[in-house]
Image (tube, rainbow, N blue to C red; front, side):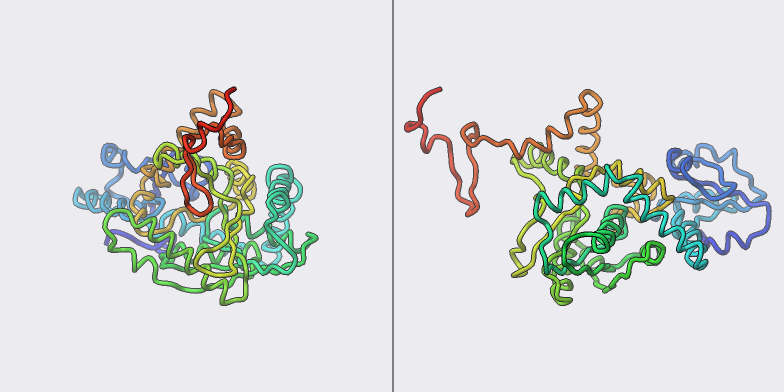
Length: 386
């Protein structure tokens, strides 16, 4: 046996050893009580430090890579097991212990809500309402499907909408929509438990998207994203909604701009709102458009909240050892922007504003809304000099 449940580990009353194999920065934030930290990639080289007369349990991000390490160590005579669901199984138990205590759950939720309006008012609440007003994201009579994937961004977006519906001036309805495209049981339970903790009345529907894209050659990410978007539109329309809200934030926007230039040879941005081309009368809005990711992380950390990361099967093995999709192009761009921002504090906002300050007279070519290409030579002979 290569793995055991966290309940089985807790029931083991022997002098066991629990090893958190996540990155030190994550271990230092929070870990299982009494756990020690040996990073995933160092386990085999440090096997001499492991006792052979005790049961050893490995706490990880998720995925199958740790089970391979367990197999190698077991062949060497160690009684080692990975925890099914890894670190998230521990978080599941923590959340369940809170939500089962009605009084404690009520207090936790109130504190979380208060932090949005009070402590993070400038960084989060004001930027949320500014985006809604500046880009006219909500109109009276709207019925909005707030799409919750289970990550930090969609969860805080849901809480922001909940607060806006309570205290805002707009006459609109909200549906908190959760699609299960084939999450493993740990991730799915984490989403449901966080929704209970945050008192979000979610509407859940199932799809088989992960199964459909599982056999796609190469990276299935683009196809998966398109299918998930379509499924959300379809369900939202079925529920009488005219808009879906997605949790893309400021960092997603500037990363998209840079990716377009460096990898797509084009100048474009992630728009704050879009009309759907395939679902008539439907619109996509991005209310976190002005909110920086670091502030969402600070809010999550301040409140002791932990949400799922990318939960698809394709990236599961990557997230098991690194905690994020470090090999993606977006991760490369994120790192590049970080390095540039260390040299100048204006870099990020300059990237964001660059698509608002386009002078067509200084552009070689561009396409209009109909897809027609315009080249500067078309009217060059009719233009006056400087």
